[in-house]
Length: 79
Image (cartoon, rainbow, N blue to C red; front, side, top):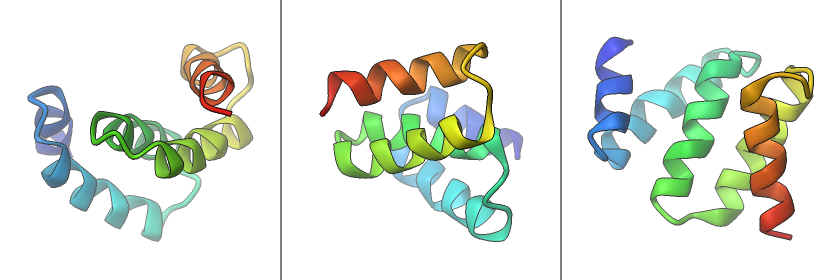
């Protein structure tokens, strides 16, 4: 929902996380939700969970997309 993106952009990561977790529980193949959940965990400095959701982004999107490239860079930077 639009409020979730606004929460993320405003740095309200806990609020955004709650909404995004619900979305990926309902639809694990929702690539935007997986991506923004990874970014939210990144903002919360939760590397382990960020990597989990960035890996899901890589499973869902071709590496030619910007989101997949961002996911790969994060995973590579946090072995």
